[in-house]
Every structure is written in structure tokens, then in C-alpha cells.
Amino acid sequence: MPRSQETIDLLLTRRSAKALTMTAPGPDDEELETILRAGARVPDHGKLAPWRFILFKGEARAKFGEELARIHAATQPGATGDQIAFEANRLSRAPVVVAVISRVTPGIKIPEWEQLLSSGAVCQNMLVAATALGYGAQWLTEWYAFDADVNRVLGLGENERVAGYLYFGSESVPKDERPRPELSEITSNWTPKG
Image (cartoon, rainbow, N blue to C red; front, side, top):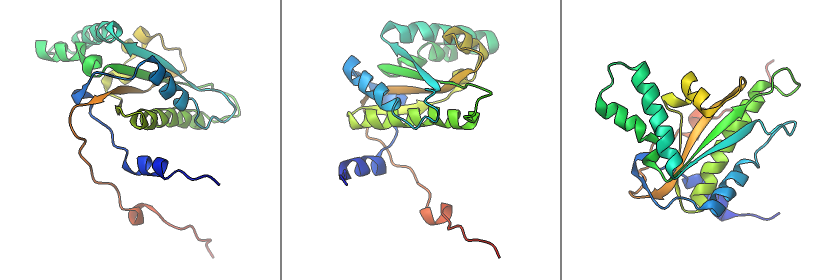
């Protein structure tokens, strides 16, 4: 059986970069296709592909930011000019942003929970792929991932929702490590009762 210590090392050391500190360049079209293909290789009970991708590159990031600023200003009447400007520039924090859209098919033998989990696996595979390609990556679900008006701007269907916005770019600062759970505190062996 082939082994890849490089893959294990990547999984054991992967750490999200912060979108706020990302710079250009981001993944080019070929690298982005690789990241998307890695995302689409996740477990998918029933071969439903219960997810899709919306890409934000170049000017699209600023145009979508204008929509975020408009929606934020309308729903937060006390928002300051600085807060509205921050929303306008939210997707400009990184060179490339991908919205992973979960699309559940209800009423079939594949449980909705499994379809949702598949979308989460897509996001994680994409983070790992971007890291393997040498880019910083962060999975964010901020307010605009849950806003109905933003979802309308995205053109989401009735059974669709944002699983996450994935930010990709070059890292401008070293990543800081964060505490991880002790395996002994989160792992147990099942034993039969009686």
C-alpha cells in the first residue's frame, strides 16, 4: 500500500491563514481548477454532488462587496461609514474567494444531514488543496453567509445555502498556532453494556 508522509505532515500542520492578511497573488485559473476538483472528490452518498461553487475574482469581489455594503446599510441603520466601507471591501481581503453552496435534495433516501456533511468536506478538501499549492486559505461563515437578501443576490434556490466563503491568497504574515484538543479528552472506546 502506498504511503504519503508528505500528506500526513500537511494534514497534521495545516492551519488557516487570516483573510485580513492575505495578499496577491492568489491561485491562477489552473490552480483554482485543481482546488475545485479536490473539493469535488469528497464522499458523496448517492452521487448527488449536493454542492456547487460561485467564484469571486477580480472586479467581481468589489461588485459583490457593493451589494454587501448596501444590504448592511439597509439592515443596520446605525452603521458608520467605516463599517459600511468594511463591508464593501470584505471580499477584497483576498485575491480569490469561492462560495461553496450546499444544495440539499429533500425527500430522498440520502439523509439531508449527509448531504450537508458532504458540503463541509468540500470546504475542507479545498483548504487542504490550497495549502498544498502554497497558498493561505480561510473558511469563513460571517453574517453574509446567513442573510436572505445576500442569498437572493447570489441567486440561491430554495434548498440552497452557503456552506462557507473560502478565501485564497498569499500569506503576508506567519500563521500563529492555536491550542488543539488533547486526544485523550475527546476520544473513548465503546464497550458493550452488561
